[in-house]
Each structure stands twice: as structure tokens, then as C-alpha cells.
Image (tube, rainbow, N blue to C red):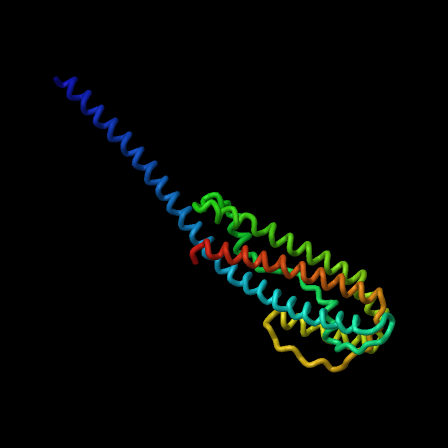
Length: 239
């Protein structure tokens, strides 16, 4: 009897130890999962707050593009209203649209921090997980497109415009450029143009402006697509 009692006691103690170990593992696992879920929620909230700023940033940029497209379309229409090589008077702010070359620069600190934390795989929503992971490449594609546009303006549009206008008229066009950037930042009302410049309706200038206008319209559409992607991703976060 004593031996049977000892065996039962040892069995009971063993079961207690095993259960204690299993309980400790379960508690550790629960605690780890809780911490991951908390960190994911904090990270997603930070990303969502950042995406609000990004959406606004892109909206301002679209508005500035709309203004530049409108003005450059008017400039092109004036050039096309006269015979080739004739001089036409064009407001300086319209011509300045040809030189407007913004580059996308959205806030991405919270997004980078979240992706570098290796928490993306813990996001339960598969679609949201995919969208967040794709955001950096989308931003990079937009920046690359605009750097190409900047290169085209610097190498083609600006030299053509500078050759076509007098030094004083070209300087007047350049003075209008800050208004585009102000509108890009905060929708600052446009200042009235100081002068109209004398523009020769040459084929080179016409083609340079028409090409730049086409590039602007394409870029504007791409940025609108990106803004919709950001907005839908933001809605998916639930914040």
C-alpha cells in the first residue's frame, strides 16, 4: 500500500508539473500574441494617420497640375491662333506652366517603420497586408515618372523656351514659377500676371509645349490613380 501511494503521489506531482509547464507555455504564447496584436494596431494606426497626409498631399498636387494644364492649354491655343512664326502675346503665368515639374514626396516615416518592424505578416486582413506592402513601390514609381518629366523639361522645354523668348520675357516667366509651388503646397490664390510676353509661334516651341501638356495630363491621371489607392487603403485600416 505505501508503494502504491508513493506511485500515485509521484504521478500526481508529474502531472502537476507537466500541466504547469503547459500553462506557462500557453501564457507566454498568449502574451506574445497580445503584444504582437497591440504593436500591429499601433503601427496600423500610425500608418493610417500618415496616409491622411499623403492623400491631402496628392490632392494638392492634382490641383496644381489642373491649374498648370489649364494655363498651358490656353498658351498652346494662343500659339495655334496665329500663323507659324508669327508673334503672339501670352500671359507669363500661362507659359510658366510648361516649366512646372513637381516631384512626389509623401510622408512615409510611419510606413517605413512599420515595414521594418516585420509586423506586416501579422496583419490579419490579407488585402490590407498586400496594399501596405505595395505602397513604397507605388510611391517610387510616381517619383521615377516625375524625375523623367523633370529631365525632359530641363533638356528640351526650358532650352526651347529660353531660345524663343527675350531675356526679359523669359525672366518674367520664371518669376511666375513660385505661384505653382505655392498652389501645390496650400492652394494659395494665384497672383495676377505682371506682363504678357512675346511668343513666336515656331514649330519647335509648339511641339515642346504640346508634348509637355500631354505628359502633364498623363502624370495627373497617374497621381489620381495613386490617390485613390491611398484612399482605399486608408479606408481598409478602419481608422
